Image 1: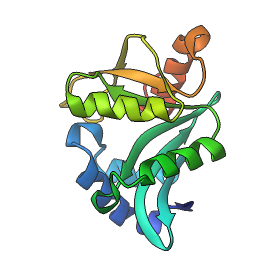
Image 2 (image 1 turned 90 degrees about the vertical axis):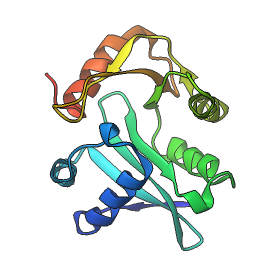
Image 3 (image 1 turned 180 degrees about the vertical axis):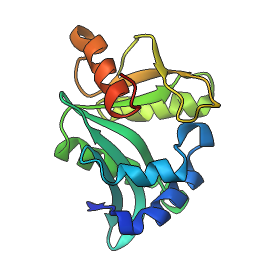
Length: 169
């Protein structure tokens, strides 16, 4: 498994993959996603295994850690160990990770949280709302998972996340 940097030249395919794998309320407008490619803190990658693209991850470099904004394994590769393999590589190459997950209100959401726990993430019990990507949407109540303890600096980490990723000062 290896990470292949996604460039602005291949951004249109990446945007299509984002739309195929995430609901619209978890995505920026296409033009706003394109603008991210000139931000050095934004680091999108395809996940490649034996010459095949099996998924993607979009990371943000924050001061204390990396934030996984989007992580997906393509349908043909799901439930075959590629997600675990990819996440292990991401953990190895990008120490101190955080990500957002939905509350475990149904089986799929609970399964997703368990997947991250099996791969070394901790479910933090702080109140957290993801700011909306689109002005027509409302903030979404989520949970933060991390590969390190965020208890002592959660407020500072949340501020950094809001400022860097969601452009809220």
